[in-house]
Image 1 (cartoon, rainbow, N blue to C red):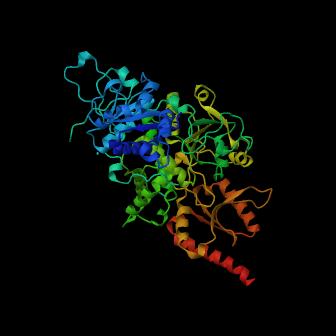
Image 2: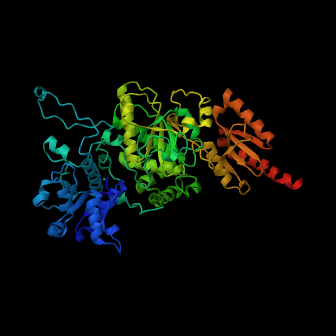
Image 3: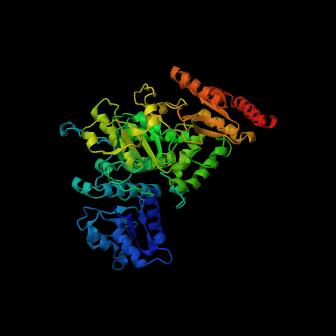
Length: 615
């Protein structure tokens, strides 16, 4: 794998086209070497050209009449052609920005045509055909229509319509050519006619409407290229500065099962010698060296495309739940009224470059979270959504990486459904640069093709103890539904983060919002670990004032159960013996009358503050 995915070769007259191409490719998370951005003053021009030719996986030539006039002065394309004269590796990708005739050796290559297209169609065509060139296939995401027997065709067949839940494969039409040629090279677009809330920056993200993903047809096109499963499951080099773990599957130096930081967050793996409840217990709250890890039970759908859309919908709901933790400054915006929507969209535009998310997607997600509506986003491509939602969820937990913890031991209705789920998870890991950690995967063909690594929780004492006390859920997945009552959370388990309200608790987040505006509430700390003695268990307290020795517990409906009730009373007794005052409130109390709850907390905290002075 080269240092860059693409090196752009272009004439000086086409610099604007080259920069636009580079921006679109980097927005799709490719690494691009371009003279306009990377050859800064003091750079060795000849050395950079050599690095681009040798260190890039592919060379893109921006073809125009100006480029063709300077063919003899642009040897970069010749080096790429010489490295792959047959075109089997698609090392040289011609992108025509003008209607010009390809001369000589370039005529043998199938170009990508972007001229005479509106901006949204050109963007979709570029990303779709580049991915097809990388994959070597142009397989559609929608099943082709069954061909009717010739004898039954009395009249010309109607154009096959897509079902309402499916999206057209691509806006760009492909030239008529044998199927073998279409699968061995990138498909060429024809010229178009001359006529789109629940409870370190690198480059500025594009904010103009011209950079937004436009019409539904053009936007859905970029999802047409289906990544090959073998590529997804293979070891993939880390990007964005995240190092892949060493090739050895033995324990890391940090302990019997290694460290959380050693587990990969860019591929599908299997965790050995552990069970899913033990891993969840060890990760709640998140350790300092762990990525953001959420438990997930994939929904079973009849096709890969439907599974992908269901996964993205669930994770975008998680991102909405985490709002405004991933958007600094949005915590003071209370509603969508007035200038609220414009304010969060402006904040999202500035934050997009920091968390490396496509700006229009982040703005739409922020608006959806503020409005508390389940829908309303534009139809971005699955690849844009996968990469964006992964970065947003990680940022919501204060981390730069994301992993899904999936209990693979849960049997699907059919083995075909199990394969579809695994293929969906592999696609998400590959596309979103996300770790997918499977537990309980039985031995067999599915396990043989997935790399197995030791788990840090395999000998974690607290995790082992907690795993025996976690009740089974109705879905039998081991993933409990966090507080909040949202339907999608039946498939998701969100861990806590020390120092912050639980991300899945609307009541805790509502209480924090009320306390933030009160001067007396200083000194509070959320989700704090506490152990009264070396022989007692480790507790995590919802909210506490350590100096005043006041503990606040916000209880969801699960605390009404016998086991939770007994555990809560034992813990309260330990805390009282340690000199703490414990106040308990239910979720409903906080959500229905947060002012009354904060008033009671204020009386308790202020009383404890006066005790030392009176004594």
